[in-house]
Image 1 (cartoon, rainbow, N blue to C red):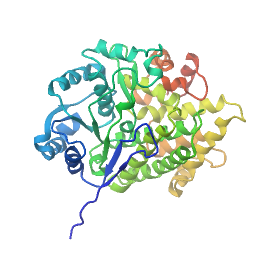
Image 2 (cartoon, rainbow, N blue to C red; image 1 turned 90 degrees about the horizontal axis):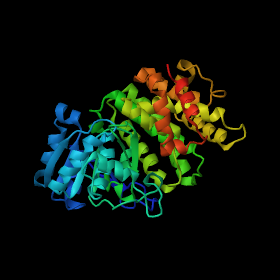
Image 3 (tube, one colour; image 1 turned 120 degrees about the vertical axis):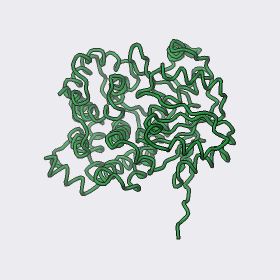
Image 4 (tube, rainbow, N blue to C red; image 1 turned 45 degrees about the horizontal axis):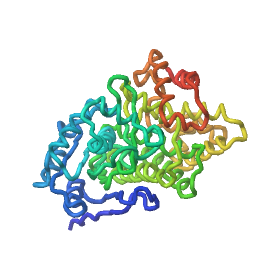
Length: 428
């Protein structure tokens, strides 16, 4: 006799006062959950879907969702390119004005969720062209503060968002939307407290459609959230410290299980929950910033580096630079040691791999070599050459990275030549 599926429906970050309405759902097939909440939670009558191109072309999942929504389905837009270029977003922004949906749903990876957050913000702030998006990014508050340095410039979004992710990047749990100026290839980060999703639906079966390298590399991105939070110069609450350590250990252990047997569903769900926990609960301490691995990674994306692969290359390099340029008695040393302990203590199998295959010694390894050893065990790239970026890009990368809010928050202050040094250390 078949057992009826049961839904877990709860607040995504129950202690985060600035996103009290964000919920998470898992346990039901994504089609059933989305249809249920479109009707009962949102009372939506016109649902607009932005769906992955690959899911649309290679699977029936998009049409399955449309059928599940029935008469509530208003329109489906297929595809946003990686790293969310503005010239992909503008046609959707203008189309949404015409369709007038009352719920926006994304089905796919991080470029779609980033795009949706920017879209709902742009729709209510008069954006009709790429130039309008640039002006919105450059907008300043009444006190003259640039938008990128604060939250809440402009009109607040009113169209609710429901995310159905297929990767572990976990941008679905933040109020930040990354998108790329197609002329300068500079990735911009927009933010507003009302850019949060109202609901994130997790379905591990859906992630079986995700290419394995994408699944693992976006899991590395979630690890980057944990590590740079733990290493931040900003103070962490006791709750956030525990969440970051627990999520890091879970991701290290369970990602390895999905490498060994990609068909296992529970490790996939555990990874998705851990990725959401760290991304969402960073909101518990909104003053906690990530660092240069994120900042440089944002600018690698427009050069064609897969989302998540940026962290595979940059996180160990940034950890190494920060350790080398921090005083021996600084907090940074202890914070990086905490990262090391969380990974080494996560799973005996991983410890054996780090030791026997990675050639590491638990006592002498530091956070950088430990993280690199973990990424090697996950078969992730270690150099910029491996992801298609050569030295001809380093100067522009350094300039653009310096203008990124995450780079500005790096535990060690960086100049252009410092970023070039970090890039050189993982050039090839």
